[in-house]
Length: 131
Image 1 (cartoon, rainbow, N blue to C red):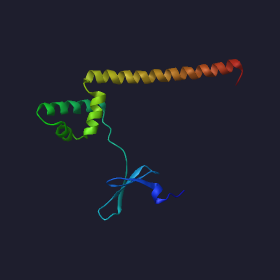
Image 2: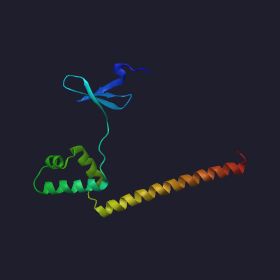
Image 3: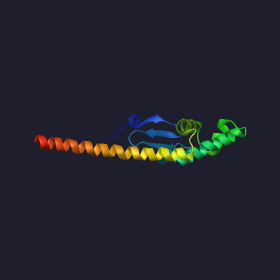
Image 4: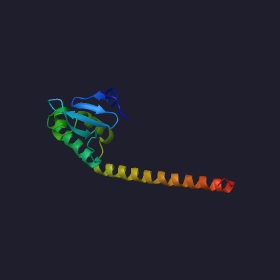
């Protein structure tokens, strides 16, 4: 199926056009030619690295730097910093480790409940003779 230009390239960005069909950004050179195609994906930081970077910002702020300067120095955006601070702010490494353990256990227990529920449904159907 062929898309029209207006349908295919919906939203314009500073560096090119976003393609709704493929989820790609077409980047343009100065002359206006398409130079490369990149996926729109951000860099994912590990929670341990996030906590470390939050501590670095606190140290830099303690040295008299503004939040914007400190965040720029550690290489993240101000928006990411505030999102991280909201989620991980005030956590020590031990607390972060415990949180990850609890999340893993929660996932395991959810799977167990799901499996048991499915088994119960199968046995109920078999007992009623609806197989």
